Length: 310
Image 1 (cartoon, one colour):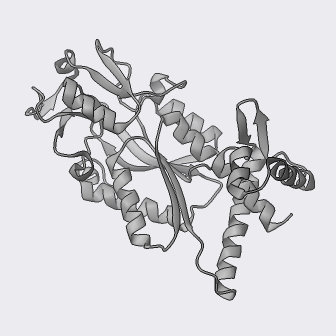
Image 2 (cartoon, rainbow, N blue to C red):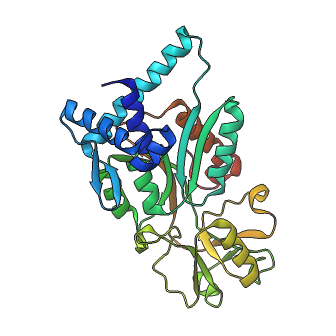
Image 3 (tube, rainbow, N blue to C red):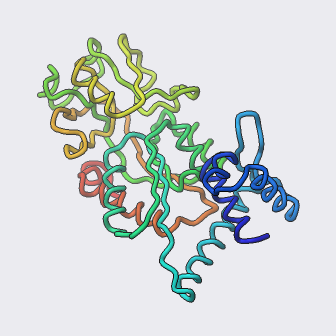
């Protein structure tokens, strides 16, 4: 085994594809596949499952990756100390549901690291994909919510994939609507008040079970529903169609503008929002800093004070 082979494994995981990893490493795909097979043969394990849909880490592969990352990180520190090499690029990947505080924390992380070089990834994506990203190490951290309805199912999925959930805050559900919406001046609304307006929800692709919905109260029937894939489209439809969506209530006017307002939704349900990571692998220094930025963003947004303390 060589350090270069360990770097190959890490790059394959980051790319989710041997073909793409080979392209980024500037080597041929057969050469990369051969290097992978050599490691698997040397240690008598299968690092990746290979299917018609691509590759995914095996149970042995996840454990192997945790050791590989630690070895490479320690090697880089040694090189910096004794070879006077410049610091390695700061790396951090995050997958999240559509939360302004997650973006704000990401901005603060990059500002405070003040690194000369870095390579970060922030994915706003579907619930199942967030869990899959963290499971297969495409992302170090994921951000999701749990509710009385989905908690049992999602926690079972997290446990099966050796992931842990750390709560950031517990929120009373709100709706986002246009500042010109007929209900925008109300202090609170009930579900029945919303019957005549389009309900906007983030689509969940193949995993469109109610349990993976990003919006709480997902089983409540709606006469008008529009599924969207990104935040900008959702906000445009909130304004253009007097639609609404259900959320934590946290708004960042710097990111979302002044045309959207948050109104409390009267319900007994709550949203436990938190971050997930693989419980077999310690967070990187950049990952730890991002979690600290998340906690700070939550405090500064007032979410922690208005709901439950961290």
